[in-house]
Image (tube, rainbow, N blue to C red):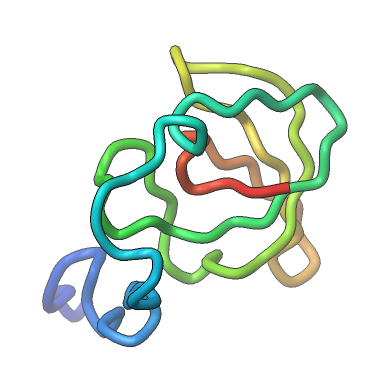
Length: 96
């Protein structure tokens, strides 16, 4: 096997770039937003917050909330190809 070169954030310079209006201080309402089971959410990584990130391949996908797990994070189910996968995501990286 070939050893992996780089980290999780490799080749994500354009993907994690934020709009100039969104740069700066993070609003607390985004940080503490609440979701209920069955909500559809958009997965978008906020590059300022490392906590509760998911793998960059899933950036921009839409998933469904299946419950609140792992402290403040939510469990999100997505379709990746033909498989369903579950992610544990912090609310700062989610939007309705």
